[in-house]
Structures are given as C-alpha cells and as structure tokens.
Image 1 (cartoon, rainbow, N blue to C red):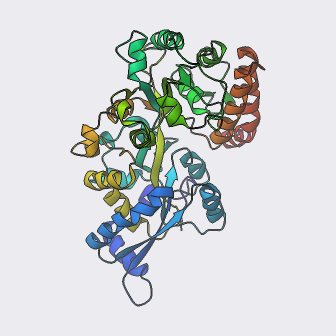
Image 2: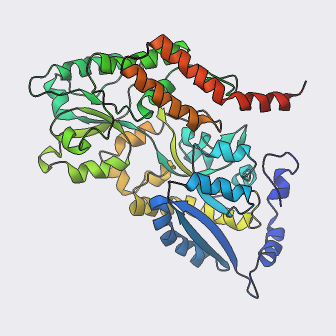
Image 3: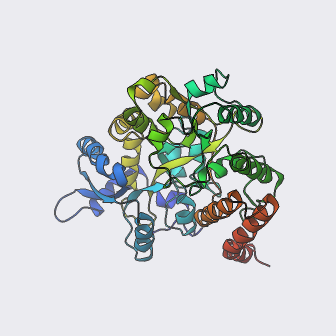
Length: 432
C-alpha cells in the first residue's frame, strides 16, 4: 500500500507498467473469477446518473465491474474523512474541488501526474485552466475535473433597457451606474440586485477579482486587509448602503423566481443549475426578457470561482490502474456530453461543449465565456471554515455593525486563528 504526499514512494512505483497491470488484474480478482470490482463513491444527483455511464465502461472493459455508492452531499465530507481514518476508502470518488487540498494534505489521494502524462484521453490543454488548477496542490495533480461550476449574472434585459442600457455591465463602474439607474425606475418598491446575506459567494467573487490573494505567505495568514479586498468589501457594502440590495437572506425571499419575474430585483449572481429553473419557473411572456452575462471586474472582464467536482483515486487502493481506466472513460468528450444530458452539469473540457446542446443554448454561452476566467479559492484545508467566517463578518458589516476597516481586521484575526495549526506544521517541515 502506498500513500501520496509522504515522499516515501515515487510516482513510478505507484503507477505500474502495462505488464505489471496484467499481473495486478489477476491479483485483484475476487473469488475464482478474474473480475475486478471498483468501489466508486459519488454524491447527489451525479451518484444517481453515473451508473448509466458505468454500464458503458463495463461493456468496453470486460473483467472490470463498477460498484457505485451514492452519498448525499450532506455528510459526504465526514464520511470520506471517516473512511480515510478507518482505512476504508473506496478506489475512486467524486470530490468537490474545495475538498481536494484537504485530502491531498492528509495523504489520502494518489498523485495523478504519471497517468495523465501517459494518457491519450486526458489532455490538460483541453480543460479550462482555472478548473484544472483546483486539483494542483504543491505542484502535483490529485484530481481530474469531472464537471464544472461557476457563478455569474442572471439579469432582466427589459429592466436594464428601461434604465437606458442595451448591454450587460463590463466593469464595476458601469455596473454601479446601471444599479443606481434601475433603483430609480418608477413603480413598486424594488431593488437592483439580490445578494443574499447568508451566502458568502458574492463577496468571495469580488475578492477573487483583485490583484492580491485572499491569503498570504503560502496560506499562513489572512490577507483581507489588502487594498484589493478592501475595495471588494467596499463595493459589496455599497450595495446595501445605497439600498441597491435588500438586507435579506435567501430564506427571507419567498420565491426567488417569482420576485425576479415581478421585478423586485434585476440582477442575481448564481450558477448554471438555475438556467433550467429560470426556464421552467418564469412566465412564458418573460422568456425573452432575461439573460446571463459574465461577471464584470473592477476594470473590465471579471473572474469568477472555479467550482465543481473532480475524480480522485485513493492512495490505498489496490486497483489504481483500473480506477484510472474509469477516469479516462468518464473524461471522454462524448461521455461528458452524455453526462451533461443526464445531469445538467457543465463539462470541464472545451471539446465537450462542441456538438452538444450547450453549444446552441444562449443562456449557457456566458458560462462558456466565464469558464475561461475562473480562479480557485485558496488551496488550504481550512478554507471552508474561513469562508464561513467571511459570511458571518460580511453580514455584520452589511447591517452596519462593522466598518470596512473593522471588518477586514476581524476577518484577518479569525483567519489567522484558523490557520494557526497550518503555520505550526509548515514551520516544523521547514526545520530550524
């Protein structure tokens, strides 16, 4: 058994030659048969539909069978950690991109650089670069993107036109001008944008668009007092101070789609899953009145987050070579196109968009453009805890309890406390 990240076993020892693979197939046989059984854990809707894809894999790879275990997203992270501690991980799994740094740091995952280098299927250049980068930890690859997720603008074209604009915003200054103009439109009480206070993502996206990273010194310290994040937080709080956005959580909005339809707000930052929801839930007469657009940045086209899930192989699997074959199969553009048809998840490869329903969908076009400009969140195991603090502090500031200066200082203090163990570990690794 080998473990990634320990430095005790090199990549060549983990990924065997073709001749050794033949021997490995026999060694991994169950009972009297030569069948290999791969344990594959997948979450949510993806876990429901992937069984349809694995049947095709089994047909093209006789002697390998895939046992898919579906996990609910709620509790999946804890189950994976428990499996690692108990030495009971599957052969491969779907893993949220923000979880990859944590499990790679634990040594739970096998590095995939050698099989990718030898693969005729998985071509790095075909993947959206920001999405691929979410799986690169300390210069080594620990996952292959399976589907992608990012956030951008859904907006009311008709309301924007009433305010005097014939295009979506292309910079923060233009966006601010549009938001103010929409707020001034006559009619019932309304706002320009919905920015739910129980979501950290809108502020995170504004922060990712800055020149400075959110954490500094290799993730040892918070960097929220940087000029860039101050600018992001200032823009974010301006939305509430000028009453361009309601001070509300999404649970306080009775129905996002109904409120969007009646013009209670004209902009909404959300993800690709809402394309189908907006098509189904908005009145037919509004079919041509809404559209999607990439996020604007401080000085032009803006970045968004590199989300989604990847496929990972666990370091203690005795069936790594067979697991890699399944990853290659699921990475084929034609298989990814079928996966999109089954799940609605956006594919991570440019070639997978070609010749699919996505290529002709006007609402998906903005996502295709935005995916060329996405950025991973900080690749430290503690990031999700820091993101929770980001939401809490931002909500306090939006209600006027904290100034910008106080909020960024508080964020740095909270992040620094969370990162204390990381600093200690890194200092021990660096030695005297």
